[in-house]
Structure formats: C-alpha cells, structure tokens
Image (cartoon, rainbow, N blue to C red; front, side, top):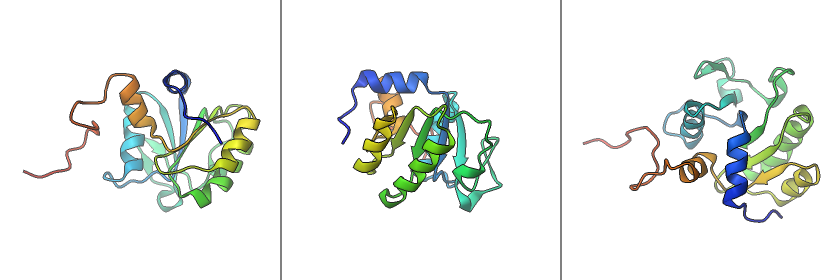
Length: 160
C-alpha cells in the first residue's frame, strides 16, 4: 500500500496538474464533490465532470459526461479524482488507466476512500496514488489558502 505522501509530492502533483476528471461530481452545492470541483475550477484547473445522474448538464461551462468512456478521446487527463465508494474504485481506476493511458499521472481518492489493490496496480504502472486526502484541502494548506477558522469553501452555509 502507498505511503503517506510528502508535502513535496503533493505540491508537485498540484503544481503540474492541469486537467482533472472528477468522477462522482455533484450539482448540489452543499456536497463535497461540488465545492471541491468548484474550488479547483476557480484555481485554473480544467475540470471534466463525470456523473450519469447529471449527464448532459453543464458544470461551470463544461459538459457533464455519463462515464469515463464518454469523455472525448482527444482529452488528455492528468489526474483522476474519485468521489465514489471503495467498491467502485477498481472499475473506475481501470477504465481511467486504459482510457487516458498516455496522459494520466495521478489517481486521487478522496477523504475516506482507500483501495490498496488499485494503488499497487496503479503504482506498478508508474502512476502517483493519493488516498484518503482532498486536493482542495491540500491545495489550500500548501498554497496558503487554508483559513484560520477552517475550510474556505466560498459558500456561506449558516443562517443568521
């Protein structure tokens, strides 16, 4: 299983990544997948949203695809960001590793998600694997945007 990633590795991944396919992104603005993808989009990353429940809709001007297989073949993806339960990880990762084999560099599993077998397979193919972490939180922490009072989601969620 992968070791805990160093800040240097996380900074490198977030600094070199340009295109992120987000599997399981939600259009519900209070869901973590929404505000993580929104944050990354606002920081200049190109987000390719994937969720069959929202296929055909748009997420910040980008079409939402129903599956990784429906993402156009000419798209080069740097990072796979997964917002799905662990039992779905093997199929998602295998599809991404096959579909984006020439460009995929990182498989990122969100907070609470790990899969040792997938990590081992991906690493054997030269990919970086991050598990049980959030790229939004890591970006904020490493690039000085994590606020003193907690996570800066840009969304006000409490009423006065």
